[in-house]
Image (cartoon, rainbow, N blue to C red; front, top):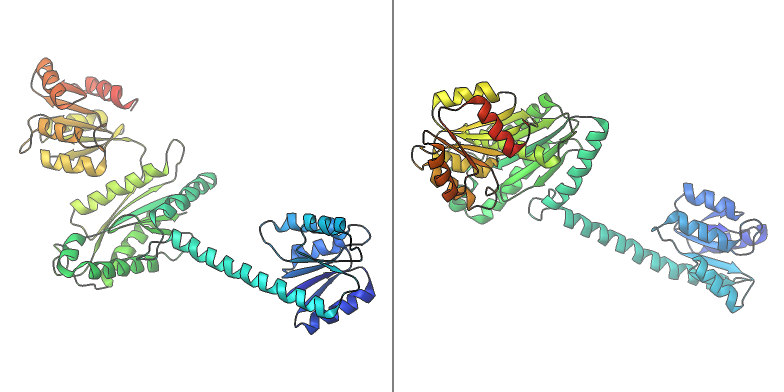
Length: 428
């Protein structure tokens, strides 16, 4: 151990240094309290032997200041003094001392005290290691050893604030293993766990920067945060992750996409933070992931995060879609569904800000879709505006039965449509 000896007497310094060396340790010498404080700030030590009676700062005051500077980093401090009264002993313990030696110091007793404090220091170090291991375990997913979702939420929020302060781009990748349920059903859950570990390893090997944060976000879903990464860089990383997972060559005989395990990725990048939140960026990446799945899987969709409100339009009428494009282009993000089943799926996956829903959809009609969405907690609060050729009074009656928020008659009027949407979403 490195033992700091604080002693103003040259004779005692020499003697005590001999005792310390005889015990197999290294003495570091300070001739005053002021010098001791300077040494502790610059040099890590394992123990302090502190003379009490010194000119300038005495041993008690030096110890108080030392404890204050060290904070939670405890090291044993042994006082050496010629005073043996109870008050001096109490004063030393109150100042932060751990033991008390009376001059003249016996080398045998000093050696025994050092050995006792060494044992305590070893227990402290062991406790620190165990706490560090527990901290790591609490932050990591037990299977894949990447961060868990709770840790991701904490770490990513700090990066969001940092990126905002520095005005640097920030990106999120949502990564979902393609047809993982089919994999589990065919190969079994132990193989499914191995697959997850392989995919996590492939992603982690691709994200080479210490600042990149990778976490397991759900069953077969991973999320990555890329600080200081612009749109082009995000696209490059997303494509590389796709390739790395595919190149692992994990067999997937039941996949409808490939003979090996693949993943779909959605990514969103932002360079503007005012009025936005990290959760909105994650939601944007999730919507991009949905597009990757809809367009064939085993690919990455990378988009610049837009603060525009999202409007899901369920209608296969070309005239209506053209009118929406003319009147709402640049004011909101329009997502289209051609039938009731697709609308229901997209609404639950994307959670749009509002839904424009044709009553007369092929397959599941708009009224059935609206009724189902209002029964699901995640979509129940989404404003749904029914559209059809029915008169407004009839639409209102039907809409009230299924929980719709509003209705509009076809053919739609652009200005009226915008006004109705703003009444539910705020200014567009």
